[in-house]
Amino acid sequence: MKPLRIALTKGRLEKSTVELFENLGYNCDEIHNKGRKLIMNVGDGQFEVVLAKAADVITYVEHGVCDLGVVGKDTILENGTSFYELLDLGFGKCRFALAVKKGYNFYHGYGAKTIATKYPNVTRKFFEGKGMDVRVIKIEGSVELAPLVGLADGIVDIVETGSTLKANNLEVIETVTDISARLIANTASLKLRKKEVEDLVILISNEKH
Amino acid sequence: MKKNIKITPEGMRDYLFKECTAVNYVCRKLKKVFENHQFHQVITPALEFYDLFSNEASGISPESMYKTVDNSGRLIAVRPDSTLPIARLVSTRLQKEAFPVRLYYNQSVYQNNPTLTGRNNEILQMGVELIGSTGKRADLEIITTAVQSLQAVTEDFRLEIGHSMIFNALMRELSADDGTKERIEEYIENKNYSALGDILDSLEQNETVKAIRKLPSLFGGEEVFENAEKIIKSREALDALSYLKELLSSLSTLGLGDKITVDLGLVQKNDYYSGIVFSGFVPGYGDAILSGGRYDNLFDMFGCPMGAAGFAIYINYIAEKARYKSKGNVADVLIFAKEDKDIMSAIAYTEELVSSGVKAQFCVLSDEAQARDFANRLGIKKFEVVGG
Image 1 (cartoon, rainbow over the protein chains, first blue to last red):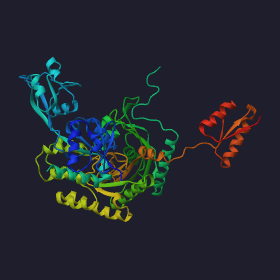
Image 2: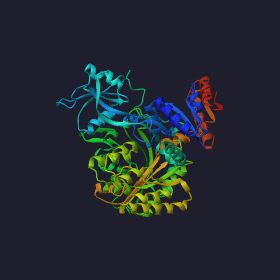
Image 3: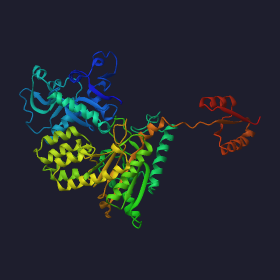
Image 4: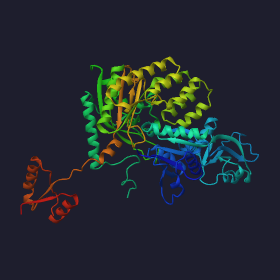
């Protein structure tokens, strides 16, 4: 049997996922000593793990070259289209929030507001839900800068502790949505390898509780 | 130099040599299955009026169509689907035919997919439509044809069967505004199960919401029916469920075991399908390679209501896999005419060899050294000179 191939989001989610696998009793030595390797074996040949940037995890899973993926809800909301979301893994918790300069009355007046963000789709959907027509500007780096220099009225970004916002005299005025890591599956893989995937899902759910 | 003359538009590609052999091989196999079932081929135009596809029931989004205008300024779409043109054709030109009619097609459809996703925008498709009949016999005939088609072109596959009335009945019972319902439909059709979960969270939690949430996970063997009966309360949905059960037990005589399964979350083009729906999967490809179902309401828009069912198979991926098995077609012998006066006798000699079953090719080069080099590069083993 071919191993199930799992795409992991590099960085923080990778660490938590490896921990989870080790708690389940799967050998993760190859990930710890990966060197320059891109595809690693986990467990007793049951799994093959690849590491990728968050948005690429979704791409690999959607195309079916990886059966499963571990990725943040933020990335799913921004890039996701067609796959199964199997589980909330409970780690990588943070939230999407709307933040403005401290004391700024965001909803005041009739002028169209400008929002700077790394997540234009999430932002558009959020304001569409409010029936508000806003101008969205995509920023690649530190979004906090935009309202400070006068490019935007507010930002929509991921907030963990809020300390970056505080240091820049910004404040959260609304939570857009809460975020955590999710286990996703390719649609065809779930059909063709139902048993293996379901067994893993049950193992993980039991471990969580 | 013009910028775009050396590249193709995104999602388009050329097919060369073995790729064509593979496509032809797959098409030939499917044609045989279709014709054995007495389906007859039709060809519809690549361009149709946009109106044909813009109907809400078509399930085709305006953004995904390639559009142009005709010389009266009317909006034209490049065929994004073959079923609607065939429905148009049947309801206008085959009125006097003995129904049901069995039609098949082998033509590309065009979808303007989001940029940089690596998907084919020109999709080679073959499919059948069984038009003018409803009920179990027609459903089983169409499913059996689908199974045989998959068997003809792939070694391993899964065919998943669902019923659109299960989801439709649940949606009718759901108390939510139209906008929310539309979004739920969109999410479940696009298999965007994460967004589906989020939107269901925002509704009042009751039996119906619970059932809709469970629906995508209700797939597999016999056990699905048991689990579904526990959470589905609607009479109409339960009727659909027991019909599915009946079909599955009939299909079990094909002896395919777990290759045919149930999937109650299989919801596609929801306003379009009105009965059974099914999808085929093969290992190594992340999406369905066959999809179809019963669409009894489609003919209403042409003013001649009748039952119909059909399916389409996406050739691209199956052919890609078949390519590695196909041998290229290289000539065994290259025939070279020494002088211009020898050309006609060399051509005649080539013809003679070909009709006796030898793979011979007349060389159109006039320089012998060049011709010999050409034979080498192609791997043609024998080089024969006529005249001199």
